[in-house]
Each structure stands twice: as structure tokens, then as C-alpha cells.
Length: 355
Image 1 (cartoon, one colour):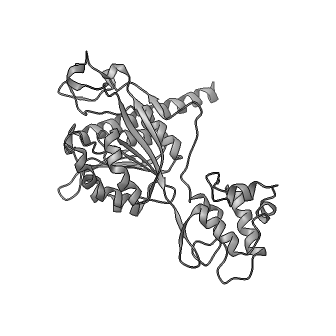
Image 2 (cartoon, rainbow, N blue to C red; image 1 turned 120 degrees about the vertical axis):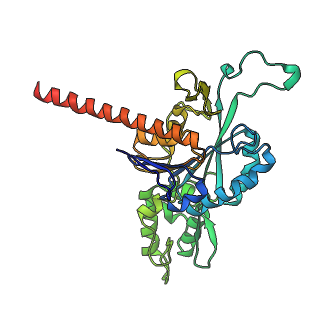
Image 3 (cartoon, rainbow, N blue to C red; image 1 turned 90 degrees about the horizontal axis):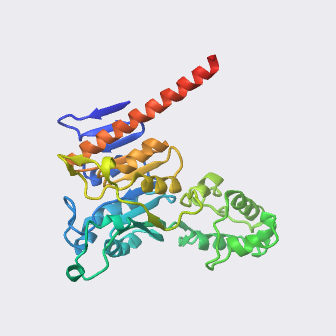
């Protein structure tokens, strides 16, 4: 059921299933939200295209700084960030993201196609090729783990450090994992060919080091200094990725048009309504059912809609009243469709059973 909390003392909030949207600045919300598996950021572009969007890219660092700091504070080691922006806007904010521990993974381009250009373009005026793209850049957390001498090392460095601390030859990692040479070559290397050990192989490395390593007061491969890392803990050290073949980093998708475009008084309500297909693509690639999504700059809250559709939990914030109202209606409509589909499934099943 959809429920609303709109009193004089409370921030207007809509809860639909496991999805929650608030009419508020996300800065006021982060501390109350559950930690995210993925963050979908579609905030300022520095182009002055919508309310509160800075007029220049030079203002973006100040605009994003408190948000990026908060994301880093509340994120998990496995949190993925999808950062939507203009190309120059992203390039401006990238150093800030790196400063707060976000690790660049890939640059994805939304190609809206030639239909995005309305009519002829005056080349003498713009003096450039018309822009029909946006950036959606993928980041993960730069995870670091403590050592016995209070260093903070990357996962790659930490694995080799702990194995060597145990005083075991590197080649013995192969024996530990039951392979010929893959463990040493993949899991303990320090070059670009390093692999994140799967949970079963990590468990074997941990068990072997603690059985055959030299005596120590601190278990080998321990995050807290008291117990060896568990399979569950290790699994949470890396961002999720559910791969789909034939999808590249260039996403050709027309801009939302016609009946799918949300309007107010006959005009497009939002200047940059994202296609739900693209939002679903990034959410399902980086999360599983029941995972938590953050949508700090909701707009029309496409991540909330997709989360409701795909069984994720989502927290969205949108400060603009008109956008919030439209997002609320959008969620309620999606919920009604989902309930109707469920009803038909149950009805079909009942007909089949009693026919």
C-alpha cells in the first residue's frame, strides 16, 4: 500500500512498498537511510537547465562537496556509484570523487540519437557538432584494510601482505587453493592482472595461512585483529556486478517523448527525463533484489520507480514540490500496475487449478 506522511511538523514523505521518497534536500536525509548498495546520482550539470542547477561548471565542486562527503561516510565497501552529468561537468567533479575514495571504473555514454536535435542546427552560431550525449560514469569504493603495523592497504596489497606475514612461500597459495599456478598468479600478484579471489578460494587461503603460518597473536587475514575474515565479510568487500552480454558503454536510446513524457500544463515538466530502461539497466547490473538504492537528486524519481518494479528498496529525495508530486503519482501508478499484474497471476493460477 502507498502511504503519505504530510503533517506540519514532518517532511512530506511517500512510502510505496519498500520505496520511499521525501520532499527534502538529500543532505537532511542520508543519516536516516539504510546504507546503499548503489547510488544513482543525477544532480547538477552546471548548465543552468533546471531549478538550482548552477550556471557554470565552476560552481559544481561546491555544489557536490557535501553530498560526496556524505556518500563516502555512509557507503559500504560494496557500494556502486552511477554519476550522471554532462561530460565537462563530470570531468570537473571527478577529482572530488577520487578525493573521497571513489574509484573510477568506466565512462558510459547515453547517445540520444539525431532525433534529439529539434530542426536544423545553425552551425555558424554554435560552431561545433551538436551534442546528443550524456555521461553516466561508474565508480566503486576504493577499499582499504588495516594491517598489523596499522598500514591501510588496497585489497590487492593486503592479500599479499598477509600471506607473506604468515611466512609461507607464494607458491604454496596454489596448494592451498588446489590449483597448479592460478592462485599465485591471480590472487597474490601486484600487477594489473590481479583477480579478486572468489569466496571459496579466499576461504581456502585464509584456512591454509592460519593452519600453516608462523605463530601469531593476530589471526592472518583478519579485518578486526581478532577473527579471520569470513566468507560473508569477504563477499561484501567488492561491488556487485551482474553481467549482460552485448551491452557496451555506449547506450543508444531516444529521449523520452510522447505519452511517456510527464507534462504539466501542456509542457514537459522535467527538462531531462531519463528513460526507465537505462535506469533499470544500471540498477540490475549493480544490485540484487532487496538491495538498497539511493537516489539523492530524485527529479521524477526513475530509480524509485525501477526499484519498485524490480524488488529493490529505494530512498529518494527531491526538493522541488512539482517534481515530488509528479514522482509520487508515478510511484502510485507503478504500484497499481504491479498489484494488477499480481492479481491476474493469482487469478490465472486459480483458474488453472480449478478448471
